[in-house]
Image 1: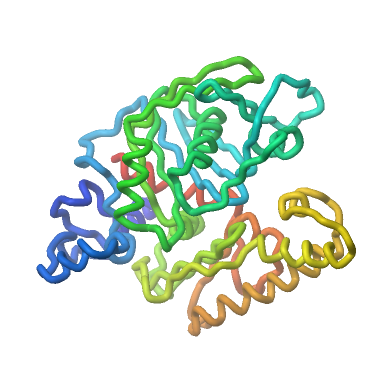
Image 2: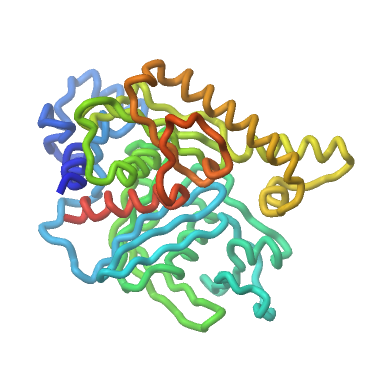
Length: 371
């Protein structure tokens, strides 16, 4: 299939320390075929993994065959929302909830019709997502890039409670462009690979014991683009993906033949947070104090939000134009939950199921890596 070709052209499977051929449109070089002076430089400073999507993501040797009982799950743990996707035994499983948790307790949940999340993990009870915002005495939010923080581990456990149906899972985690490094890969594998999570759903009293057999990482915007491109490879023109999140906007650029261009790809500190801060400042001027999550969740202040998102839209359009000066020859896609609130240039293509695009693309990458 064409989608498999996209992945074959951009992913290296196997041990990151082994000498394996890197596939990037065509076989060009060995991953470890580097001058001695370059090897010394790498000992001093971490480098981004490979060029393009030359991704050495398995921490052990390539598996000869995929274990049929292992469920592959793509997880996009953002600052705003947790998004998870899996296709297992011909059934789709997905989750979407706010990246927040807090103390939980036994209360009536009759008024919560939209899948409240209430779990027990390591002897502690947590409300997660919307339920936490409304009922927890103290809410903890995912504020950093790290994928191994205690906050992220609880959010991953909540996601697995929602969509893991197999006792064994293989995770593919989305990471921002700036931390797509060997050190990040090693860090997440040390934290999660071969670990077991026991999580109880306190609403239906079911318990899941889940072994994480493997874990890999992949750039968030690239995963979204793989999903957006579907069955196509850009043979005739370059393509770009603008993935707009809570705090950052990821821009990924691919030359013809789906060859990643590192020079024209970047991360900009701009996203939903920018718009919410504009509203927050206007409210302070009116003598009203609200946190960013409170502003984001509430249906209040529509006029202030409209203005804030108009300004953020203009800013995002400017960011794209400043980053890529060859817009006339490019095909540009836009994804991410924040993008749903923006009015961007009509020549940019909004990805279907924009908020879930990265997690669905991560799943596709995970399937390829497990083959």
